[in-house]
Amino acid sequence: MQLCFRRLSLFSGIAILLCGFLAVSVSGQETVFERTFRQGVQAMQAGHWDDAAQSFTQAAKLRPNFAETYFNLGLVRLQQKQWGEASQSLEHALKLRPGLRGANMFAGIANYRRNDYAGAISLLKKETLSDSKNANAYMWLGVAQLAAGKVDDAGESLDKAAKLKPNDVDILYHRGRAHMLISKDSYEQMYKVEPNSWRVHEVLAQSFTDAERYGDAINECEEAIRLKPDEPGLHEELADIYWKQNQLDKAETEFQNELKQDPENVTAMYKLSVVSIERSKPEVAAQLLAEVLRQEPHSPDAHYQLGRAQAQMGNAETAINSFQAAVSDSSQNDTETLRQSYYQLAQLYRRTQHPEESRAALNSFMRLKQQADAEQAKRLQDKLKRSSQMQNTTQ
Image (cartoon, rainbow, N blue to C red):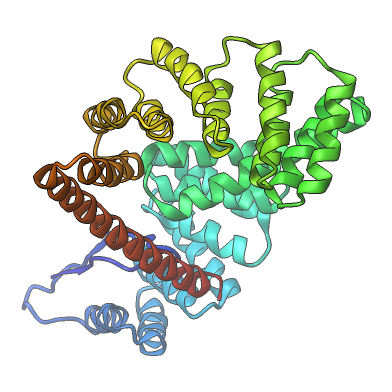
């Protein structure tokens, strides 16, 4: 008879396909071993781990050289969080059958759970060598390498995992963590080499900004500028910090300083135009945006902001043309710009006595807003679901 245990999910969706082929006696009667093994598989499928462990332990006594029995027992012990026994069973399965699919990976996971990171890395490397398309094996190899302090190796392993499964949330999480630690190590080394480098102050400013410590971020950014006053990008970074604090006058000054250093910086030019609109300087904004659109003629954001500037100047018809251009150049992914363009069009059409066009634009705005609200609700649900899964994984 053939006994097949199809899927067993372990730790963030990892699964293994295992089929055990058992000989049938000439009479066609199921042997005691076959019956015991089958009962263990059925208990696993039902999630009855204690019963499964008992059946596989008995089956191992009846046929001590059948590797799949120890493999299944190891998987059961993993589910029971009995890491030592899991490792022992899985490594015994590998002694009996070194090429047993998935055994190195799960034995590696068991060793990782036992804090035997060197043993885990060794086993997981073997799994990746025998199965180069196994994204989960690369992920767990990276996780074990991170735990062992081998951050560069971990980054490489997790990059490979992400290429194989680019949309796996767990892989992306561990990959991001690895690269964050790589960056941290690089910055620490940079600080050791030259502690008063302007680059160090720039990095500190960025880290303070991420932590929303804007006062400290401003101080570090100003120090970087003092040490390297002609470096492109530094004034823009400082302007961004002021903008986050709604200090628009200072943001405006720093964006202007950035353009003195780098007159072709389209991003700084665009940002300065938006700040100018917020400071009720639509003529300045319109001039800047004309240059932005000369360099990037199909930028929906630039068309949208130009429409805002023209509306501030009272040029309703030219504002309508700009908002229509923003709609035309927007894709369905540009939902915010597209949605706000329709809203502005609805207001301008109403103001210029075009009620039908106003209703059509307003309907488009409402449709996009409903879609955005639904997507936001779904993202929140997905976030809560992933948080619950992560909690279950680490328990």
